Length: 41
Image (cartoon, rainbow, N blue to C red; front, side, top):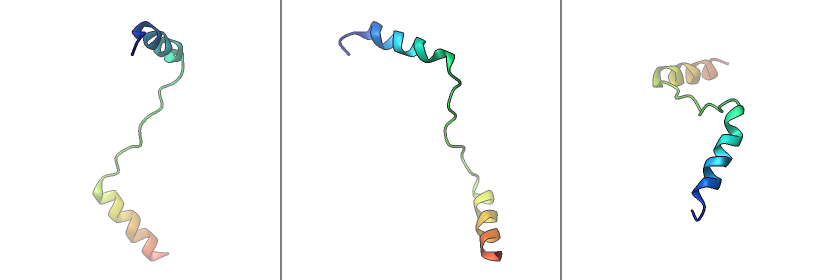
């Protein structure tokens, strides 16, 4: 980056927005339950 200050300022501009959560990790047990539920349909 040729201008690190600009990068810092761009982060500050977005600081007022709510954070976007990352995709939640799905436990293997839950994935198995979902598969079973889909098979039952």
